[in-house]
Length: 393
Image 1 (spheres, rainbow, N blue to C red):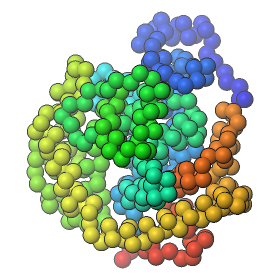
Image 2 (cartoon, rainbow, N blue to C red):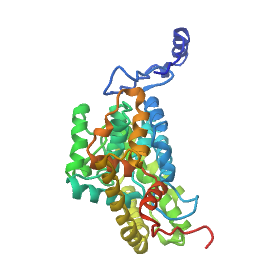
Image 3 (cartoon, one colour):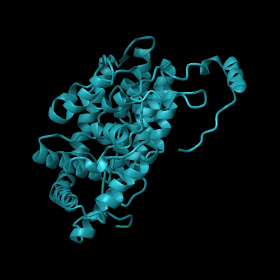
Image 4 (cartoon, rainbow, N blue to C red):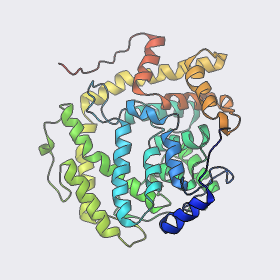
């Protein structure tokens, strides 16, 4: 085990005496292993969670995972790594004024999509389709994010952080987000399991903390206007002028500002996060307009369905074949199982290789970046039909 230095007791006492706001560094965090990851002055509970996520095996892979637009050679188009930063910034802007724990907000925001598939929600849908056909279980990226951080990497994150990550998906836009009850890890684990077996259950999820509720709504704020900017860069739409004006505006900067202001105005001093009906309805309409003009673009949807879906099936099948014969030279071992074993070596023995094969296949594919997925496919099955749109056309 590595050796960790600590601040002297004398200096800690002085710092807390001169900065009383730093005294509550535990933040009420609840962990599975209470003997590990004890909060201290220089690493409070939720800062620990944030840093564990930032330094985790999969965080860097955000940089090459589709947010909305795949197949463009354009570094100005958002990837998932940029999206989680936008969510974190937006949520902390709200949380700071409301007096919430901004470290918990940051941990939830930075971890909320870490289990996302390559190729965005299309990839998520295709992986769930295959997984369900074989096992009768559903794949959801928020559940996978919890699995990655809690079960696979064994990071011993707080219940508050894990719950916020799980519940960033759930009921659609609401005017009123009141934190739900949560008794502990046993109830949390039951919720996670039910997401695998009951397709509709995920729509009932509500975070247990105000911080989780803020991240939930900030996720929408972060993408609704940004996706419009990206759509312009891909020439899918000419400008934001194709959208109607509303109480939240139609340009990204105005939408972010106006939604943040409305939430603070209605939530300050309350035990819930509130948006007024006018702004909530405008957000709903903005999302519907994005769906009609951007997300369900015919050519793009057809491309995913006809090209990416069959690739997912072949990659999934190849992984299962290699697991069945114990081919330890295969990528599922060298780039996945062995990498996990190495990542958790200081946290006890890893028995990950004993995991059910379909679950390993799902874990491996969900962990892939867009580029890795394509390279894996082409290594085994030859050139794919994917065509990237270059900078110079």
